[in-house]
Length: 230
Ligand SMILES: C[S@@+](CC[C@H](N)C(=O)[O-])C[C@H]1O[C@@H](n2cnc3c(N)ncnc32)[C@H](O)[C@@H]1O
Image (cartoon, rainbow, N blue to C red; front, side, top):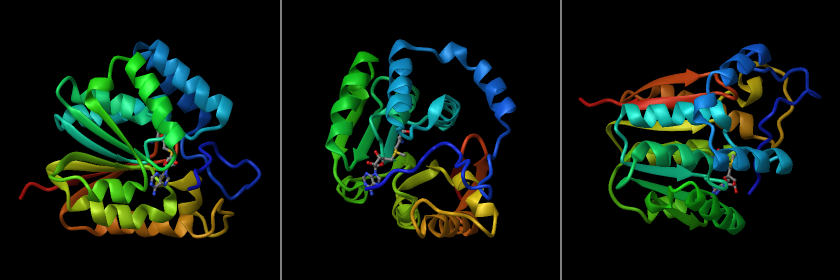
């Protein structure tokens, strides 16, 4: 399994930065109230190891979205070492459930350590394996299905997840602007076919009559699609 680079590819002039860096700095200056020792350690690990976590601004967004739909049950496709799960776990509260999946067992180990230290372990279960298979082994519906796996899998994950989001619940996916590659004709992809897969995914989500969709351009673009109630 490959992971994407979460900073803009400066070597490729066709790749765009969705939000101006000065605006990003300003946005970061507003979210200091979310500081937490464990969160800082997780962010430092990402920097040191060039690991593509969603980062603080998207984390705050995920937690807010989850609270807005009173989420109690969340499934994560591609949890890394638990950074995005940290935000969902805060939102679901005690008694809530965040089911995490990742192909790399070392990430599960690290996630458990961090989330335990943050006091959030009681609402997390972590499964090592192909996210699609972990998901297929679960039952019932979810308040939120969150997709952050390898980008070639995005259309498949959407097709699977959309059936299991409850009415009024959310499908959320990260990196849907793919550093602007989706918006230009000439780009270099880090894995052939990933840009096309993301574009196909975005089209499918927006064309689905059962969902209302929106893209928040923060960092690398986060799609949120709400399943209609009627
Ligand atoms: C972008 S990182 C996830 C970051 C995480 N959501 C966060 O923000 O903290 C993607 C992760 O998904 C995992 N992955 C990619 N494709 C996968 C798949 N089909 N099944 C399971 N894990 C996958 C990789 O091992 C990697 O850890």
